[in-house]
Length: 284
Ligand code: PAF
Image (cartoon, rainbow, N blue to C red; front, side, top):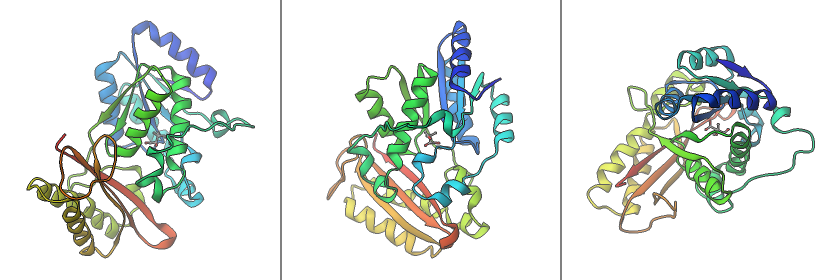
């Protein structure tokens, strides 16, 4: 597995690897877990060459403490990627990605500034900007993203369409712990008690899905989710959005057609707050 730290080195490496065929890309911020390996496996199933990136992107963090506390586990990550059969890994520095004088941003103006984008202002602009840079640097044929980050996936699909970037975007189903908690690099920051409490996200989605399948209204799903969170004092529900699955437009009243429920919740004390998200697509 080739390790590249500069754009020039990655470009040379990818053009050499292209002799084997098409290239699948998995972008990450490191602290890898089984969810990332599912993305690598999906890329591997479709492409003879797989490239991964590890870059903790500062522009998508609103809160400096969150950026500072983001887990960094480079040696273990490289080991996992090597064992998963990744061909090349790109680990750029912040200066390599954002050289002095960098001023260009990419923003999906509508999709980025709704739902989770309201809880984390600027977050999706940071994601869109870095992902566009990584697509341009790697020149891959396809890229793979987790469905857990549902809004992120829609933002990336939209920017690729709008900017005519020649890359196919694939969503990969969420990988979960045995008790249903969605795998996330942030989970390691939860205290043992908060780790148990965090399953409330999955529980609320299960209950809401059951109710949605009886033909209930969006308002009754919201009430059920809020009531489920009320039973878990360690959790603060930050966002609960019931939206059309593709446009992410809010739904009021009777549910008609495929929907997505997007949840975000905080766990832990003010000085170590961990924001987790989860989602459920229903009827797609
Ligand atoms: O989902 C992530 O890990 C990040 O948001 C991404 C897509 C790698 C951009 O930094």
